[in-house]
Image 1 (cartoon, rainbow, N blue to C red):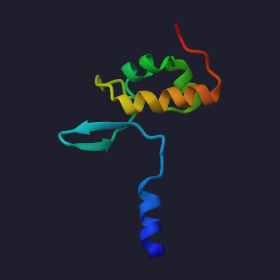
Image 2 (cartoon, helix red, strand yellow):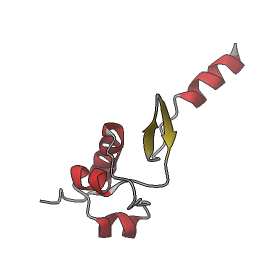
Image 3 (cartoon, one colour):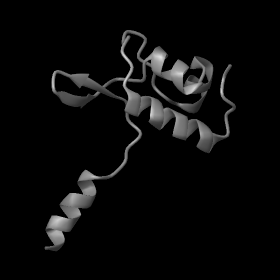
Image 4 (cartoon, rainbow, N blue to C red):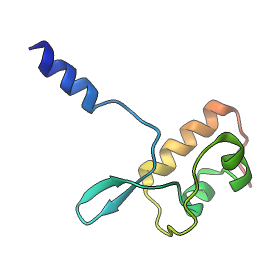
Length: 82
């Protein structure tokens, strides 16, 4: 029973990792796209200074990544970029 609970909670851990959709699967990607950063109100300079990886080749935007970045931005105290 305890092993089942450990597996369940390990599966539900929240990680700040960029993800992308590959077919029907959600996969971890190299970095956040510029579009995701823009929608979250974070500049590329802020992301680079804070250690977030930016994938300039990705053009897609995943809503969960934007929500992660918005939560991260509020926690860091950055103002929303206008």
